Length: 269
Image 1 (spheres, rainbow, N blue to C red):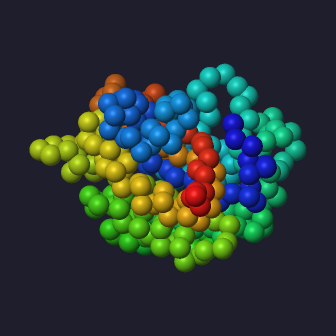
Image 2: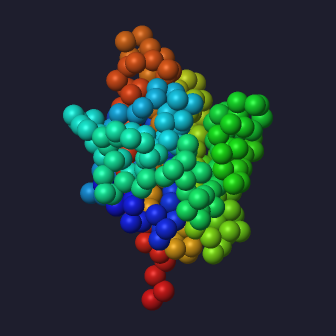
């Protein structure tokens, strides 16, 4: 586990959720060499297998923003990177960044961070009262239909918006949250000839996301060093045991890919 208590204040922070991405799909695409950018970033070039605290976007992100990120899929207790300070917590250690606030964004704002939300799926689209709840927790938030689930180029539009926000806030410590929408249904438009979603089309969506990452990473590194968490919020079922979709208790929904790593600042050499 990264030493978040030491890193907060010296590093920018990225939380990127690859919405709806299954662990088995992420592993399969990585081992096929289809996500070379992510593979270079992940420690040991592998995803961690973890369990999500919520089986759909709303529940999972509420937990994430309170410091309850996906938990290692082995018996615990497991220490946490971030935690709201409360008596009796068994998962806070000397490496946990503690905040006296109801959510991580407020805690980091109190520590001098500027918080940025790049929305993706409907819970971040600001088009309804519900879709404004999460974005309103941030200092600034961005969403357009081009960033949503139906646009095949959504990763490029999302990462462009993130780059512009980073460049516009030069000199500030940043907490950047990106909810990547491409893996959410519908994703069959990433697989030529497909008329319905499945693990293969979700894998193609992930491969496209990977191909769009380099410009964002360059902009991030030009801004300084980063502490990064990249994970899925939940998986989804494509017919397993008769289940389709998420918000159910199947293993493919609860098991998600996760990674945390440091991204160094751009070398001045």
